[in-house]
Length: 276
Image (cartoon, rainbow, N blue to C red):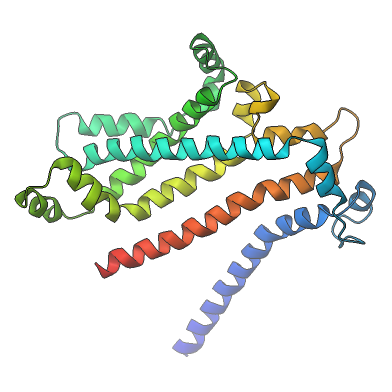
């Protein structure tokens, strides 16, 4: 009886997971399929397969937009933002987690408070400040905004993970004559790799997909990121939805592959830490 109940419980869980997977993946399937359709096909049979898998929409994306430039801009902004978030977030989290000082708790709460208020609510004073610094319509201004958005959660995640690491590792390294910088770079940070991968994934996806801040802060066509650049197909009276879905599919592909790669590294990092 117990085995039967356990089997039913596992079956219900598997069914719910399969249903959740279907709900999550079906819109992506519709997006990819619609990339091969014309506007007439999309409106007449939105959920059916296309009559032919022609690359006409892909040709329009390539010829009518500066697609490669937009994608390179997104790559550059996302990569620079993630690197800065990891560097500054790791340094702050390491100081809070591994050293004891009076204001350690207050500093941590300062970073955590940044998670409570969306930065979009402060877009007007933020725009005024960036304009005063001559950072409007620049990569630097956009990257600084993303770093400010990502640091609070990065410090929160990394601090919690670094606090779980045994202090005996540091003490033995100090006895061997290792400097504080060497201890952090060679001993502690390799063990914190799973948390760093989580931070990278958590921030890379929204930064890559963000449309709001590039729309406000970027005006030059050569500096536009991919989500902003694809709006060229949205007209005042008509929208070429087939071409739009093609651009969205191409835009989703790199970040999806990156997510899969980092997920594998995350699992490998956990396994490596468990073995050690």
